[in-house]
Length: 165
Ligand SMILES: [Zn+2]
Image (cartoon, rainbow, N blue to C red):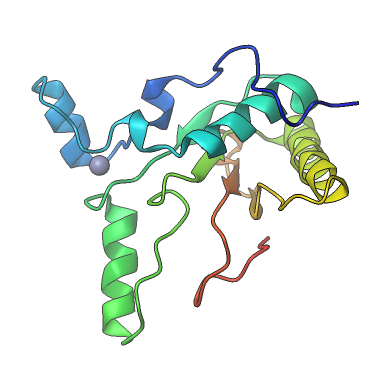
């Protein structure tokens, strides 16, 4: 049986993968300054789930192309502005909440990662626990280099339906 409780034997994800990659964060890092968007913004529980699914279910590398996104990240800014424009409350996305990761996979790997994430969720459901991955969103069109699967761990909120494909 797959162990969904004890931590993985190691951390498979680098700070570089998980930290915010917006222009402001990148230039702060370039100047050697403290950066508000560093990898510590990733929710440790979410990271523990990613590590377990990586080690015990998918069992292959999961390159993260986008992890945490700070307030200054263009996608986060656009989301806030669009909410304001439409007179709707801003709902923080997975990345901005430290519970989002885009994993660069395509083809067979994408198929297997989708399965692994659902199996991991299913094991939690069987144990009477909430499913850790509330968003599993394949983005598999366009150039293979740009394809990814978005994994999110946010709970349902007004303007944020979960579970979500
Ligand atoms: Zn940033």
